Image 1 (cartoon, one colour):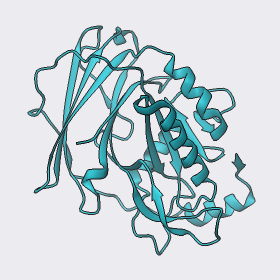
Image 2 (cartoon, helix red, strand yellow; image 1 turned 45 degrees about the horizontal axis):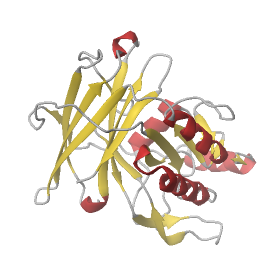
Image 3 (cartoon, one colour; image 1 turned 180 degrees about the horizontal axis):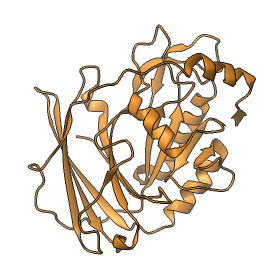
Length: 282
């Protein structure tokens, strides 16, 4: 893990004062698209990995490659999102896209800054060898394996309805409580929009100039809830169902066929631990 040195401090000073203009995202919560909830079956424990990265981070491609290898090992049981945020995330003047977002910065602030990069947060849980919730690359496999041994306390179903003509996406998230979560201080739902295979500049070890053909995976584009999640105020006892619906209009630059929705349930209070995650395209 590359520790942040005096050079990083200079980078932070260079970019720390850069403002990200507020973006008004056409997201709204709706109530009309959910069907009557039905039991969710055959869903295994699924682990959320939030990778924090940036186009100016020369070591981050190695972290992204490691994450792809882990996805190859665990398949659908690993739900990954790559969030461009922090001191390495400001785009180059020549960047085709702005992968860094204000909401991504909010999420980084919510889970805590890393000590160095590559870095990721696994189920928003603290593990040995990490810096607060952030884990270096060599800690990801063990943390994921440990989390996969747990039984899911809640199951998640995602129903997406996308209109190609209007680019409007409607999403219904259904939660089925497998455990009595009313014993917890608070329970939250977070819903994110991802886009895969985004081609844009990325600094790599192979050259001092950023690679214009680098393929970014699992790119965080937006959050349909608040960045810290929506508090679930419905009944959360074992056997109960919770449904929330959202609608968002996809920006023209997003390739709809490469987009997906991820939803995850997590605790509040003294812990941010993720209980279950799910991903679904359309």
